Amino acid sequence: MLGKLARWLRFFGYDCELAPEKSSDEDVIKLAEGRILLTRDKGLADLPDSLYVPFDDLEGQLRLVHENYTIKMEMSPNHCSLCNGKLVEAETISGRGWKCTKCGQEYWRGSHWEKINAFAKQVIENN
Image 1 (tube, rainbow, N blue to C red):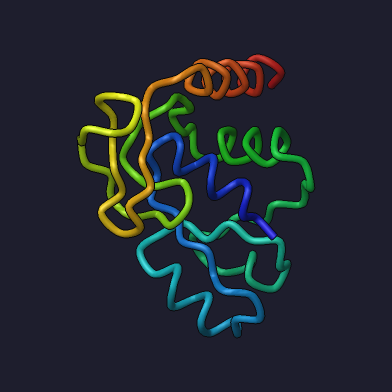
Image 2: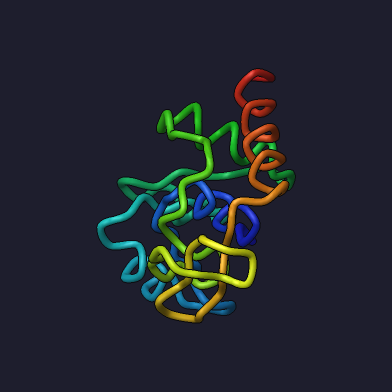
């Protein structure tokens, strides 16, 4: 339910795990240990260190997380946006960039970098 939000938080350098579909509440709680639990499940939102995310749109979701945790919202190549693996500096098909140690996905600083930062700035300014 919050896959797109997790991907964007990873763009910003945050460690974000997604619970597999049809996970039990117990599995979700275990996966969230040591993390803040962002959820669309009102029952899980009653747990400590959790935040209920009622919005369907990415902008609303990011704004809510930013308001509650004052997160840094600018590109930070630390975590793979696909699998949450660690990124390391590497030579990529587009020159110097980063490569995921888990899935091998390559990243580089392209036009998408500026677009992501511009969207994040818009989210904060529309607050």
